Image (tube, rainbow, N blue to C red):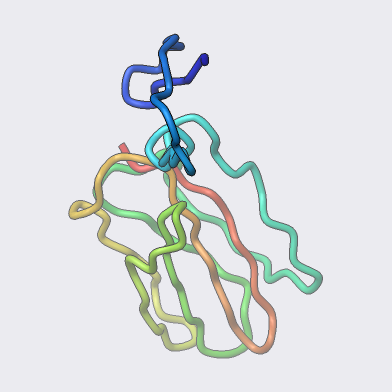
Length: 122
């Protein structure tokens, strides 16, 4: 049997003993580190920009909106890491210094429109 070791990113050969009913492989770490979502498509997207990208400690979000704005940041495994409401016209800055390095999704919602962009945190 040939297996892929996701911890060392190498192929290994080995013997699977006797009556094995199930082989479980958790490749979450490998997938998160090697496959990054390129984009998310929604039908009614809101016009917004994020800068800088890649970011280190702070992210500025510029939104063309006519109502209050909800900004959410998700890790690539779907965990909500930041959720913040902003009033119309308020400067939108998110502090990212507590986040580990990696890729994240920034979702912006306002007035029934939403959009998502990928960012990289260094």
